Length: 135
Image 1 (tube, one colour):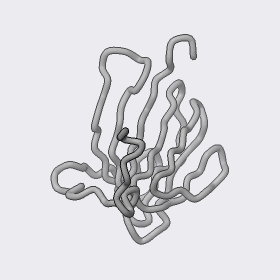
Image 2: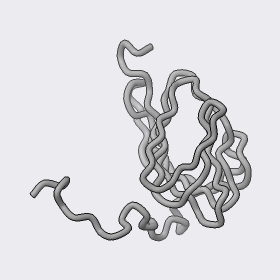
Image 3: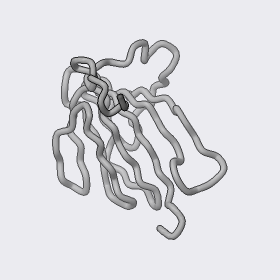
Image 4: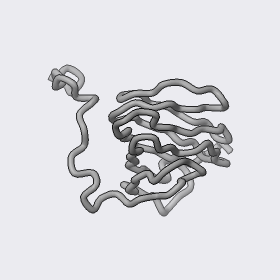
């Protein structure tokens, strides 16, 4: 049986990550022009080349906090929502996101994420540098 055929646990996409705040995450105040203190931890950082995944961050947006609208020059950022729900803004268009959503933000595209709920939004942020020939 392959992984794709394994039955998933009930509610698996919405399962909270345990012990996020115990020494793992650090507070960031008004990150990227956002509102409130978000919590983040750099899970991975590539040092040797500009292409491919540059970094992966684990981010928690407590209730009523946000990563403000911002853009990246050459890199693409991809948000993977692990739990909770919020409002994403992409090039001026706002839409709801929830656990399981994957949102790619193109280079130079303006994007931000707000937690408008009363519970945490947990996400992974992948920053991907330009691949060969993509510059």
